[in-house]
Length: 350
Ligand SMILES: [Zn+2]
Ligand SMILES: [Zn+2]
Image (cartoon, rainbow, N blue to C red; front, top):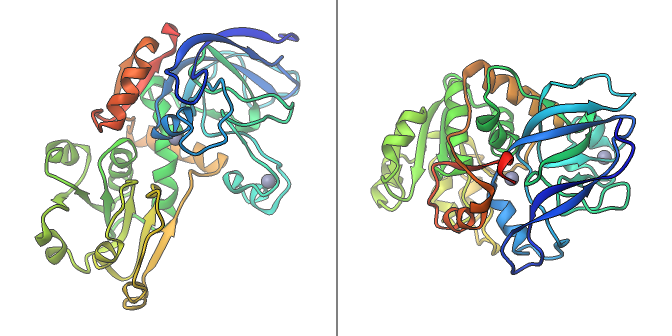
């Protein structure tokens, strides 16, 4: 058993404005309930870029981003019951929580009120900064580790740990399924998983994208319809159509116009958010008993449920596999929306 802190290679942003570079970081000893994971792949999430560039403030540097982790267990602590060496596993946005609050007990660890611990850019219960998936290995409590079913390849599974659960959870919560019409705003890293999952849940799926540039992709991913939101006719034609609209974009939207696309009782759920507060005429909610909602990732049990669902339906992410030396270039391309649909780092190159 690894009773000592180990030193492993990683890619880190040394400070807020600096590009990521190769470095080494400590990993804690494998504790009683810990698993040591040999990281094979790490997805690049848009929020990695926000945090590495300190767009949200109070970033902890040096910062090793990465909360879409897929790998193989190489060692387990003596108290671990759910995993053994050789298991295929994943780690998402959280590596710990208080485990006692109402939300933790309800399996909503992402809303822990007692202090959850992010996979990176956070302080762990040992008082040390957490470092994410752009590294060779990670030590994580078994309760925050999920199993990646054999039906999913590890590289295509990695992005499911954030993009997959972020879209699966609200689609389930708001009842996407047979007989329901679901629209997904934006066909990026989140949106493409939203389309795949909504389709697999049995809903009739429409992509609402700025242009028709990715229409062929959208239809292949499982969308039944694809509309350009730059065309005002879209909003006339689709008025009152949808049970659920999932917004995956962070651009400021005309929320009143989108609420007009909902059926009576429908919900517009946001997993992306514009930086500025929005102005909204509340009559666009009152007329038609509509809901404007938000959703943040999902709990650990639901993340496992999502992975099992994706394996059953053969839903991996569409990825572009890169060497670690291309992370900074990949960041620029993500910011330019030039990725179809998720960059994944081959951790063997870290
Ligand atoms: Zn993410
Ligand atoms: Zn809690």
